[in-house]
Length: 336
Image (cartoon, rainbow, N blue to C red; front, side, top):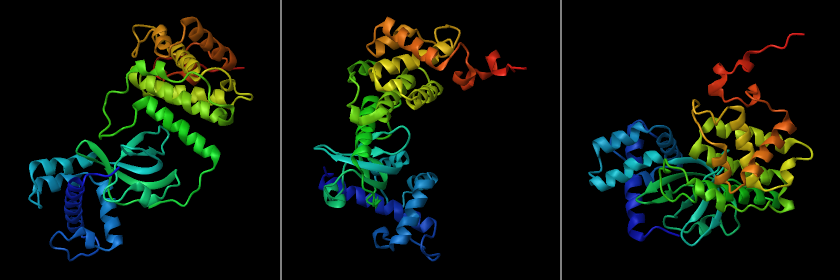
């Protein structure tokens, strides 16, 4: 889907004026620039240098808004100011939908963005054969997300296995945040009640343990960031990875939501999550409820994990980093 013609014209007006200002301020391409140039007419290398500066220096946006060299309106300056919330990186252009094109970030915790093209549809830019990996800058524009008009393509082909993993990552991203269609991403995570709606059947056998692991990671990430903290999320990922590496992996059987529940319960058990003096504090039954799992099932899955990996109370390997200084077992030495 494209921006409207008027919005596309406005975007390029703002973009070219800002980047012309950056080119002048940093003397990009020439030390003799004394007035903001027509950015679109600059050599490609100069455009790329200005683009890199835009990525690295938020202060350039602040200076532009303060000086307003283009005599913009308050609404136009607000749009430019919002570009401090840009998202820069490598993305998989995953699928072309009616309302937007899905860009999936390539980091450890993928986010799915719904992006609008500017003057030319993405299908014409990248072709019909998706996924495609690109280097891009995503920008907020009014209540939408667009890209900055430049895409760097990677000549990579994706086999069936990678395509399946990308689809699993996309599903996990949607379960965690939905498809993000405005920036910045809201501070409030998706409501926990959404977890019970996630498909409880394990993926097809062709997907493999890695696909199951990605699903579980998406579930635990969402729950921990909604109800606990990032330290819990990181330890849950570590525990999931350890279970995935066992041969045969127990993750190959059972439902992802039940494993996610058991994994969070296990990390909570080690760190006395039900102790009201602890922060964060949470009842184990709240974890079961969030994943639509019976308390006896959640408790049983946690016990299975603890027995399998020989995990004990205050186990240093699974202790929250923030609690290391209050965990006596972390400082014990085994002298023989």
